[in-house]
Structures are given as C-alpha cells and as structure tokens.
Amino acid sequence: MASSTSLSSLQLSNILRPAPLRADRAGVGAPVAIELLPFTVRPVRSAADLRKAVDVRQAAYARHLPEFARTLAQAEAADHDSDTVILLAESKEDGSALGSVRIQTNFRQPLHVEVSVDLPLWLASQRLAEVTRLGIVEGRIGRQVKLALIKACFAHCEQHGVDAAVVSGRAPIDRQYEQLLFTDVFASREPVILRHVGNMPHRIMYFDIASGQERWEAARHPLLDFFCRTRHPDIDLGKHVPATWKHGLPRSQQAAGAVVVGLAA
Image 1: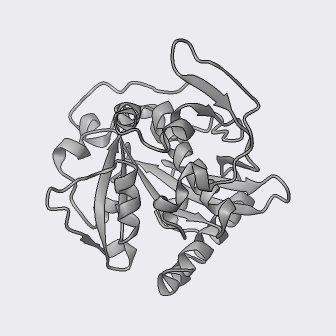
Image 2 (image 1 turned 60 degrees about the vertical axis):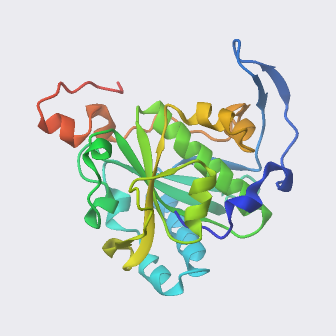
C-alpha cells in the first residue's frame, strides 16, 4: 500500500465524520451506528472505472516516489487478472476519484509479492489476499477515504473466506500496518528487497482475518468502532466475485488433491 498520510493522523477525532443516522442493536453485540460518507466505495467494473483508479493511484505515488510513479501511468497487468478486485472511492458531489486499492488472491497463482520473496509454508498454504496500490487524494477527505478503503479490504476478505491479508510496506508506511496490528511474516522484521517494486526494501506483514476484531478489542484500538461497530452503506462491495474465488482453496491445497469447495454461487 502507499498513500500520503500516516495512520497516526487518522484518529477518528481528527476526521470530519457525518453524524450517525441512527443507532440500533446488532443481536447481542455492541451498538451499531449507521453512517453516511461523502463518497462511495465500490469495485471497478469498467475501463472508465479502471482509468480513474489508475490516475488517483499514480498521483498518490507521485507525491513520494515520483520515479516509480512514472511506471504507473497505465494499468498494470495485475489489474486485469481474474483473481484481482480493484476498489474505487468516488466523490458523491462530482464523481471524481478519491482513492483506490487492489486486492489479489493466491487461489490460482502466487501473490505478486512472491515474485520477490518466498513466503513460509505455514502462510502460503492459507487462503491469502494481497493488498497493494493503495492511493488516496491529499487532505482531510483523503484520510477518511483511506480508512474506508482499508475497512472495505477487510470486509472483502471476510466475505470471501480469506484467512489472512498480506501487505508489503516500505518505511514509514510499515508503521501504519503495525498500528493496524499486522504482524511481520519473518521473525527478523528486516525489510526485503522487492524486485517487482523498483528494488525498494519492504517489510512483509500479514493480518489474521478471523481474529482481527478480537485483537482490536483487546488492544482497545481507536479504529475499532469505525471498522466493526459502524455500518457504512456507501461501502458497497456488491456481488462482484472474481472467478478464482469460486475455487475456494489456495493453490497449495488444490495441488495436494484437496476437494475444491465453491464459495460463491
């Protein structure tokens, strides 16, 4: 992921948030607020959508990595993979792109990060989703968009049976993942040179999806309410399911002769 702000600046008290429409009870759980955002988040569905996602992505990278950003002027091959979903945030006011992020699974092919590093078997054998190319506009609205895109990534993983989300973070972006309670894949915590990302060093980190809310609760995480106790109708992941999700198991388990179970109709 890459963006223009650090997570430490994303505390909810620093974000202009609309007042909740109402509050109710979700079963026996904590109160759930329903909150409208000044933008929408949805999957890219057309060439025009992809162009908007690519433009906002390149602009975000250009603020910090101008040379690398020049390689992002056009859609990447990974953007067209059948196991890839790109989420796009758009202003309700004028439809302009405010941010985008890419999610790719390991169900049919290795994660993109595996071009540069071998993941340990205990991780590679799980259902994984790699989250990359997070880019947002500058300013206060960009910080809110970033939170919404991150929440959408977690929701996408939950909806489609992903075991863990994998990210690669260069300094100081890696600190943002630490604050979200991502864990280093490698005990050394040393950055790894990623050939597919301009030979820049990144820490490789993962997030266990099933235990996420429990860990945020235990840590009294400042984003717990936003991620888990607030429903955002403007984050609409729809029924977009890449073909690869329907196979339901990562490549390693399929290769071992495991029964393939469909996750989607």
